[in-house]
Image (cartoon, rainbow, N blue to C red; front, side, top):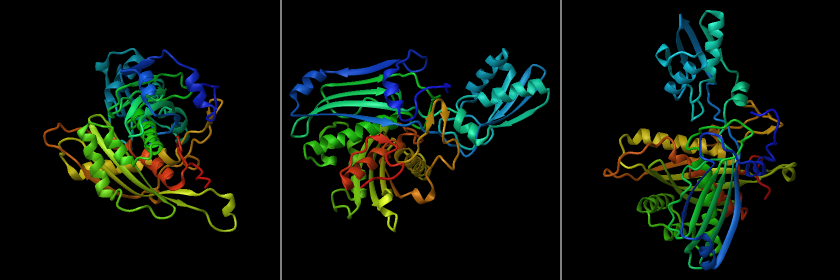
Length: 425
C-alpha cells in the first residue's frame, strides 16, 4: 500500500488515468472481431455506460499465521496457505537457500478465498525464528489482516454498444481498467466487438479473489445486457436467448428460469425480479433473484434509506459431469452467500494510503440474516469433463440483484457495492 494516494472516492478516475507496465497481467490484452464502428452505424439504438467495482477484503475467519523452526540451515514452516510450493520459493529466495532445504507444512486453514497465496507471514516468522534461534509462532491481528493483506482489485468498465429494434446486438466495445481480463469475452453472438483489458497502477495491494475479475466483468456485461433489453422493450430472458448460439448458456438460462417461475407471475409490490448468466473456468451459470425494498418505519423513517433484501435466488449450474451432487450444491450455495457482500455492502474505505475500516465492526460481511432462500439446479452432461465449482457460481449474483433492483424501483445501479447504506426511494 502506498503511503499516499487517492481516496476511495477518487479511485475510479485514478485507475483509468494511471496505466502501468508492472509484471503479472499484460498491460493491455484484447480480442476484436469485425468493426465496432460499422456495428454502431448499423444499430438503431446505441448505449454507453460505466460500471465500477470497489476493493474488497477476503475477510477469512483465520488471519495469516505461521510457525517457523530452523534446524541448522534447514527451515520448516507451518502456515495456512493456498500455495505451499509458492511460499517455499518465497522462503528460499528470502534466505538465499535452495528449495530442498525448505519444508512448508499446511495444517487445516481457516479459509482463504484466493487471499492466502503469498507467504509474507511465513517469511516474517522465519526471520524472527532465525534471530531468536528458537521456534517462533506469529499471528497477524485482524487489523493487520485487513490492512496489509491484498484485496480484490477495484475496477472501472466502460461499455459502448449498439442494438437493432428487433433485439439484435450489432456492436459491443468493452474496456476493463485494472480488475482483470478473466471472462472478458462474452458468449453473446455479436458480429462486431472489442473486449480490452488495461492494467493500472493500483494504489492498494491487490491479488487473487474467488473468480477474480470474472465477477466485475459479468456485473458490467449482464447489467448492460439488461439495459439493452429495456432500451428495445424486450423481455430480458428472451433478449439473452436471442443473442447467443451457445447451447450450454441457453440451457442454464432456461433451467434457472423454469425453476424460478420466470414470466409466470409479476413481483409483489416493492419486490423485483432479475436474471443474469455467465461462465468461467469451464462452467456455465444462470441466476434468477428476487429482492424486496424494505422501507424504514417509525419517527425517523424520513431520515433513513430503504434496505435491499435478497429474498430468493435460483441458480442453475453446468459443470459438465457431476461427481458429487451434494458437495457441488454446497459449493454453489457458499459462492452465492459470499457474493452477497460484494454485491450489496462490502468495500474497503481508504484515504491517503490508510485503510479506514480494518475491523469487522466497520467492515460488513454477509450474516445469516442476509442469506436468502437458495435453490440450486444442476445442469450436467456426462459427455463433458467436470469443471470446478469453487469460483464460477459467484459471478451471477450481483448482476441478477442489480437487475432486480431496477425491476423494483427503476433505479439502475452501476457500482459495486450497490447499496452499502441502502437506497433512496
